[in-house]
Each structure stands twice: as C-alpha cells, then as structure tokens.
View 1: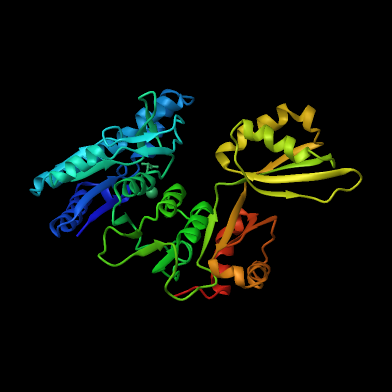
View 2 (view 1 turned 60 degrees about the horizontal axis):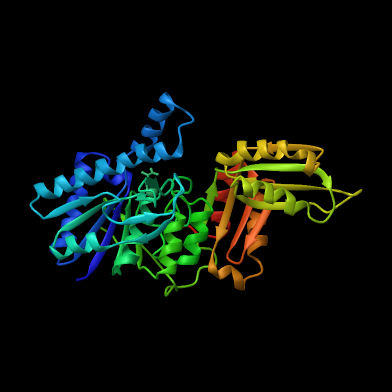
Length: 403
Ligand code: ASP
Ligand code: MG
C-alpha cells in the first residue's frame, strides 16, 4: 500500500466505454488500499481537433489563447472520469492544473513546471478521495493557463509523483510498454522489461513516441519509479529506472524522427566565430538546432549544415536570410524530406563496433547517410525520409533485436 500516480493517455479515455475501463483500473488500485492520483490527457484526437478549430478562426492566434483553448481538452476528460468513478460508488474529486498547484514558467505552449504545490491534492487524499488531475496544463505567475507542449501529460504525472513522493508513477498507454522499435514499423520488435532513465531519455529525444522527454528528465532527477504499461491488457509493462538488473543489451532501441529538416549554409567564410555567429542568431529566435555538420575549409570557404524541428524551419530560414549580409553564405538551402534514425543503448560505450554495424546495415540496404551525430549512448543518422522505415527494419535485423 502506498501512493500511486496513474496517467492515462488520450486513446485510453477516448470514449465512454474506455473511460469506464480506466475507472475500474483506478478503483482496483484504490480498493487495494492505495492512495491514487490520476492524471488524464484529452480524449482521442481532441487536442488536434481544437487546434483545427482555432485555425478556422485565426491561424496566428496568440499562444496565450491557444493554451486557454487546448487546456479545455483535459478538463473534459478529468470530469468525465470523475463522473464514471462517482457512478461506481467511490469518493472522487477532479482538479484543474491550477487547482492542483501546477506552477509553471511563463512560456505559453511549452511551459516548464517550476513547482507543484501539492497541498490541495494531499488534502483530498487525506479524505480518502481518488484525485483526478488534468494533465498538460498549469498556471504561470500571471495566473494565466499554460500548457506543457504536446504529450506533456506524462510530465504532469511525474511532477506530481515527485512532489508527493509517490511510490510509483504508472504511465498507461495503448501499447504494452517500450519496444526495441515502433511495432508498427517492425512487427517483431521486442518489448523491454526494463530501461534506464538515460536510455529512455535518449530514445524519447530521438523521436520514439512513448514518453514526453521532459517526464523522463524529471523522473531521473527525482528518482521516480516509472512504469509504462497497457491500459487495455493487465500485463506488466516496462520499468524505467536508474540501473538495469537484467542482462545488458548492446542496443536497447531504435527511434525514427520525421520531425526534422536540414538547412545548409553553402560557402561561408572559413574564419573563427562563424558558427558562433550563425547559432547565436538562431538562438535569439529560440530555434533549437540538433545535428550539426561542418565541412573542412577549402579555398577559404566551408559549408555548415544542421537540422531543426520542422515547426522551426520557416523561422530559421527567414532569420538566416534576413541576416545573410552578416553571415555571408553564398546560398542557403534546405530539405524537409529527411528523417533522423537513432540507435540507443548504454552497452554501446564498451563496444567500438556498434557504429560500424549500424552503418553496415544501412549500406546493405543501399541507404545513403547525410549526417551523423553521436552521444555516449546514442548514434543518429540523417537520411532520406523515404528510406527511414527501411532503415529501422534493417538496423533492427542487423542487431538481432527481434523477439
Ligand atoms: N492532450 C495533449 C496532447 O495531445 C497532452 C497529452 O496528450 O499528453 O498533446
Ligand atoms: Mg502521450
């Protein structure tokens, strides 16, 4: 018995039947004697639908008003789930981000949680109530509603678990856990029983659509026990934690990210300070740069290429073009038909052959690599988008990750 935070994603609460399914799983945990805090996302495609609705009115709506609109999705699911639990005869209360004390910084649309004031939640738990909290939303110092970025409900759940010192934070979803690759691309992908925070963080940042990467960062920082599991099947999921106790796998997983675009500055002067100039101009516009490649200088010139999120492409190109009198590139080109494919595994630090094996898999599949980047436990390549799924399959096979 203890305190358990359970987060249910949009597909888990998509309709009335599923809301009751969630209610009964919550009640199982509650009836076993636990205190339960439940975090919910908006039902099904609600968030996407709300974004479409906004576009019909104003496709340049302010981020503040977008957050007011989008937070409504979670407010619908939290109240419906509370009503289902009421109907099943257990004491329950639903709370918005504001009521639950989810304090964030001022950044609308991608706010970060600064502090969770857990008193109200605790007060309700002390009355033996099941507490439902709207995910994805918080409140900033102006008392305005903020949202945490797409997929942010995971982060709400972990933040609450950390603030209340929960014994476990369960992230319920429509798959059984974390897999070696997206099972929609690789049907024979293996489900992992465990993964480390660092590996999960690299996978999440590399585009594996399982967990919001900020949620893993928080879980690591506050040592929150995390489990990713199915809301439909009652089977154990994947445990995310500091150390693995099971066998060390060389590669824990493969991720594909289509949310990337490449920009190349061709023939900029090969002089000190160029990279600093370019990337500080972009940083001022809050454009995040990912994979960077600089060529060796020839005839006093060099090329600098890098990737950005597709959402940032337009701002990045406009900014670079507007500043090209200072930067001095001969041409600025871009390609948004690219994907980033990454392999992640804590075991690769000790094995010098991992990169070669990955590149061999790509060579065998006749796939050209445009850019490469690495961290201690990750290798990423940028390739043509049309090759991305083929690449994931080929790498999965090469490393024998199948079940
Ligand atoms: N409803 C939000 C989204 O669709 C937050 C979430 O699902 O975690 O991005
Ligand atoms: Mg999600």
